[in-house]
Amino acid sequence: MVQSMNLAEDLKARGLVEHSSAPIETILSKPRKVYFGADPTADSFHVGHLVPILLTRRLAQAGHEVTLLVGGGTGMIGDPKEKGERPLLDAKTIERNKKALRRQLQQVLGKKVRVVDNADWLLKVNLVDFLREIGKHFTINDLVKRDLIKRRLEDPDDSISYTEFAYSLLQGYDFYELNRTKGVDLQVGGSDQWTNMLSGVDLIRRKLGKEAYTFTGPIVTDSTGRKFGKSEGNAVWLDPEKTSPFAFYQFWLNQPDEDIEKYFKIYTFIPLPEIARIMEEHRKDPASREGQETLARALTELVHGAAATACAVAASSALFGKDGLGALSKEARLMLLSEAPSIPVLKKDVAAGLSVLDVLATSSLASSKSDARRLTEGKGVSLNGETVSPEQKLLEADFRDGLALLKKGKRDALVLVLK
Image 1: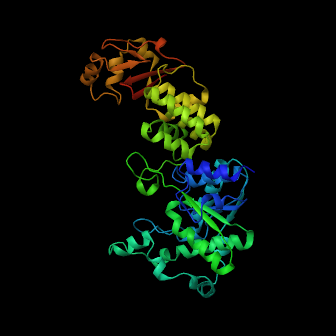
Image 2: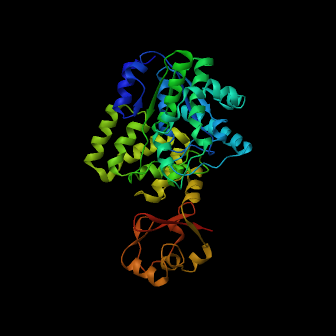
Image 3: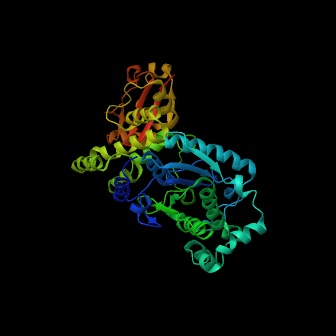
């Protein structure tokens, strides 16, 4: 097992300990049975969820025994949101979401781990027994002081239902049940779940007379201060059907300089001295974007694997790099055509003297032929990396493996497909 003090120091240095029920050194002073829980309120995790998921992976790599809980029971209720109540999902949707989340968890964690479903015990609970045995250990006085519940209660237009109000009891019961039946003594999660997680620690102490622990990772925000998540409308999903590997790679590639060191520490397993070296080189030449490229590669490979990452890198380089389209693998070519805007160009039209200006005028890069002429006269358009003139003709030689790249400025690209 990795030395626990080294792990504790590494977690603190990376900013991965937001709250803890005891000093992190104490919590990690011995092997723990750890659990991380997630409700199937969607059919995919997003990058905000990656913080506690990767925190769980770090603990597993250090030798702690990990259990993943998929909330088939709590997912039928949904935890309280900042504003408004979650829609109640039907059993079929929950089952579909559970399967999708299990697959993603196993993939990101990189090895088989035990997965449990709280529906196995919550759906068997007798209400009167639950109120007598569990509810009596929670006070209304304590629950209404919790930040999220307090804010909702203070807003007359956004009251909280009893269903949401009782969620904390169910989450506490999960920890109690796992402790009682499987010896789980540590829960990790996001800091937005901190008070719910403490409910389990308190319940175990009161019901079983045992010590259990919990700590949370931070809520990560983007450059505007908004947290990553679907409620904020800026979710970047782990499911490749919802956020493609190309878009996932581009998301990290386009992060501002001031955020990338934080993201390196939180999201990657790169050792801290190596992160310091990368950042030192990046600061010498920020325009090279070495930091963003290393971050984007590391995270895309972690979530989507090496093959998809290689395609995303190749497609990105083709669109936005200095070398243009170059030689693309079949897979990278397919990714490029699925991600970038493209238009067909007929061989017979090229043979008849089709001009770049005519193509530009009928594309999304220009609003009209006069706009296309203005852009080309201003040397703002390139074909395969070379500036084009207003009268320039397209040639078959401009196409490599049937593709050519027309660009306005550095970022607006259009793939021409020779037919």
